[in-house]
Length: 197
Image 1 (cartoon, rainbow, N blue to C red):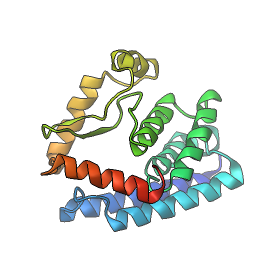
Image 2 (image 1 turned 90 degrees about the vertical axis):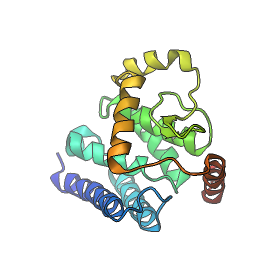
Image 3 (image 1 turned 180 degrees about the horizontal axis):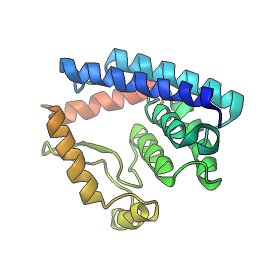
Image 4 (image 1 turned 120 degrees about the vertical axis):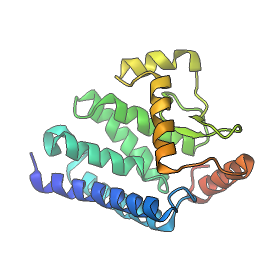
């Protein structure tokens, strides 16, 4: 195992989590994509891509399961860099096939990219506020078989995950946007501005 590389990846994850905690603490976490968060996500993504250029995808045998999970988190949060997320998905797919990453990482990144592209997701991992003001899954492609897809990669039942996410959102003080349609337009505009659409 490359302990130095593992520690570098864990430091990126810590910076991400620390930034989120500061915004949660000052009450601004849910006010849109904060500039400070975006800065951390972009900086982390660029560092991850430098690592990938050097060693390929940092899988579990190279950086341990926690280091590999940190790499995935950085990729998952690189939402402002479509080329990075798409490349990381390719690499994670290879890592899953090689037993170097769990399949849920591929599922989450697949759904994140589909959301950013404003397409239905496959696994129901991405939640958003719906027209009724409830935290709900972003539309799912072939929703009748989502339970099978989730079970096939070890994810809990969608209703269980939804219940957990709603409880966490409530505990953190997250609330539905006052104007659902306006929020969706903002997301669409942002997606166009960074190249997803």
